[in-house]
Length: 97
Image (cartoon, rainbow, N blue to C red; front, top):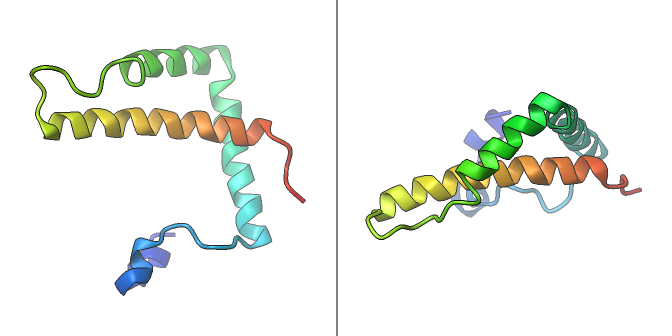
């Protein structure tokens, strides 16, 4: 998978999402989303996800004493939790024809 990114150069290397997805890519994205859903919809998975949300999304990104570096790290952690939530939403949505 990493090869598809390391082979890109110039402006195309900045575009990580292809403009159109192949049916195989759509199926793989759905499989990944379904796996996230299966993991985090269990009782243990829901507990972990709730805990991660409390540690990241529900806390402020910037505090009075935080540096830009610390704020960036905090936002990165929150973004990872948001990605999990998006994967779960994708799994719960109807597949597009």
